[in-house]
Amino acid sequence: MAEYKWTIDKVDCYTLKDGLENVAYNVHWTYSLTEGEDIVSMNGVTGVGSPNPDNFLSFDQLTEDIVAGWVESIMDVDRMKNLLTDWLDEKKAPKVITLKLSQVVEPEA
Image 1: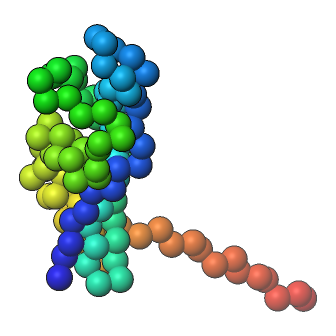
Image 2: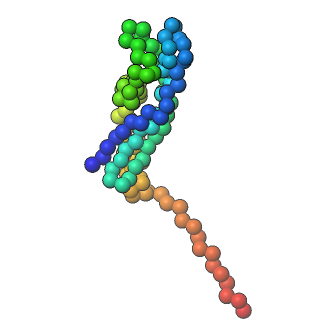
Image 3: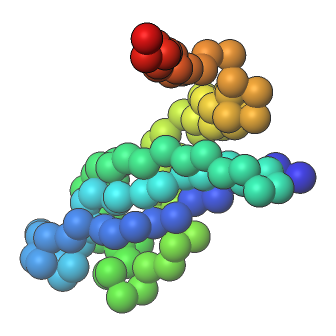
């Protein structure tokens, strides 16, 4: 069974912005697809915009699920899933391979 998963690698924060402390502004993430023993992934950084003071969460209140939800709301997740699926299919059954020619050793006369 295929499983898609977000991993939040780190979050860039302003120490102080508009009177709020530890304000997240960039999320470094990995999005992966696992099927059996096969894994493919992509990485990126997504800006999350300015905080809303009415529902602001400081860094110590954030969870991976909350931050992944922010990223999902910004990114084209369907496209990302399609890319990962294509990469996994290619990994399982490559359409292109690189082969190395054998060196032919001429017999000594």
